[in-house]
Structures are given as C-alpha cells and as structure tokens.
Image 1 (cartoon, rainbow, N blue to C red):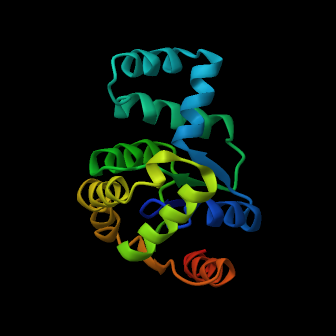
Image 2: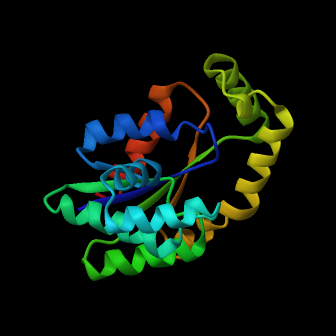
Image 3: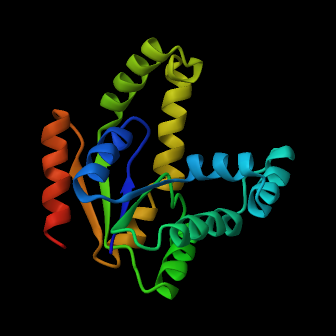
Length: 191
C-alpha cells in the first residue's frame, strides 16, 4: 500500500496535483474537509460529535478526526493506498495518524511537501481571490497572516517526517506537468 501525505502552504497546488496523483497511482484521496462534511451529512456518531465541537466554535478534536479517517480507510480496505490532504496539521496529529496506521500495518511512505516562496503564494492567492470572489483571498494582510500561521503552526510537521526519512521537498514552482513530474519521481523512488 502506498500512503502519501501531500503537504504545503495555501495555494501551493496540492489540490491540482492530488487529482493527477490519484489518477496515475490509483489512490484514494483523504481530504479531512471532505470527510468531515460527509460524516456531518450522514449524521454518523463521529459526525454528531464533530458537530458538537463546531457548534461551540471549537476545532474538532484530533481523536474525532482520526476516527473519521480510520473509518474511511476501513471502508476502502482494498485500496492501493491513500493521499492525505489537509492532515496532519500538527505533530500531535502526525503521531496519532502514525499510530493508527501502524496498527493496520500500513505506514506513511512519504511526505511530499510542495515548496513555494511566500511572494509567489501571495500572488497566487490574490489571483484566486479575483477569480473566485473569496473575500479572504482578496485581502493581502489576511493572506499574509494565513501564510504566517502555516509557517508557525503547520510547517513543523515536516520535522516529524524528516526524522523518519520520509520527507521530500518538491519545488512547487513551474508548470503543472513539471511539478507533477517531480512528485512522480519522488514517489517512484520509494515504490
């Protein structure tokens, strides 16, 4: 089984590249946002527990998110592997994910981190804001704060996977196909 954490700051190109990787390697996409929405819609026990956190304006607990991911993995037991997108975002989440996967005998093989400098990210997010109409992508100070929060709170997860020799830095600047080729080379080197 091939399990990949696709990582990077906002607008690094994770969504675009995830779609191409899913097709090429026939993996299952595990986006925590999508999983959470599906669990809420289906009113599952974990979905109702998550709703309780959200109704209070709190982040959904790591244990609930891990439970949802585990349910999705169990529901796709015959899969060739998974791409984790948007998770883990903290070292605590990375440890919980590793522990859960270890019990299933299917560890994370790679963390592929799309690296894009802050100036380029700001440019991309402003462009996305103009195209999508999203207010949060049209305000440069909000964008700069999101990047700052990513660098402070989320980027340290890189160290967790680097300590396991699973981290690969991928240049996230270039054409979609050039970046995809870089990602494939990293994946093929461990397959």
